[in-house]
Amino acid sequence: MVQLTRIYTKGGDKGSTSLGSGKRVKKHDLRVAAYGTVDEANAAIGVARLHTSGDLDAMLNRIQNDLFDLGADLCQPEDPTDYPPLRVVEAQVERLEQEIDRLNAELEPLKSFVLSGGTPAAAYLHLARTVARRAERDITALMDHESINPAALRYINRLSDLLFVMARHANDKGQADVLWVPGKNR
Image 1 (cartoon, rainbow, N blue to C red):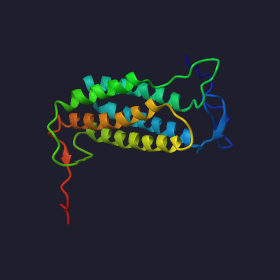
Image 2: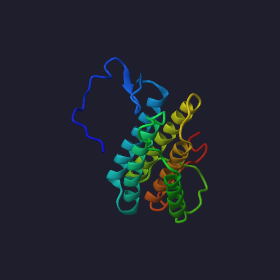
Image 3: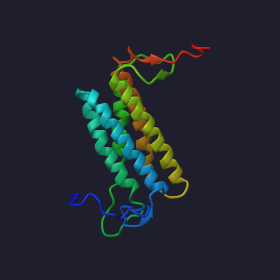
Image 4: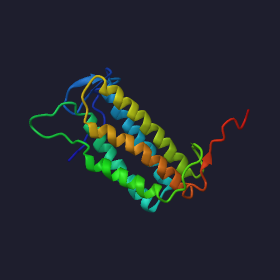
């Protein structure tokens, strides 16, 4: 279990930070950027949760915990010999897929792209989706240089899809979606 007794360590005052393995890297390291963006997605979901309740809120609560798992996975590049690292597992990805399918079954098919907006919950879920997509881009950039857990990439990819479906669901099951009208303002 994590126990924090000091919030500041001064260890990063010269532009570096420690990974889960203890290795020091620059704060702009691709790995740090990837798990930092995952943390931003988690924060955006926290804001969205101010406007959700019931089933959506329960799902978002689980996702926030999963995103900490994902951050822990990304910050641990090597498999240490003294203890197994926390890794995202395929069951977490499968749960997102099941939630996407269940929520999407209640929505009418789209006939246009959806603009961010509608209800406050939907707008914030769309914001969280875009941050999750940025996290995905950061993770794939990291993959070009280092090995990562393949389930980690699948998780963040499915998460952005789920956040999209949740946003539509929060928009009165798609009835309040704001649809793109190509060329409307020419």
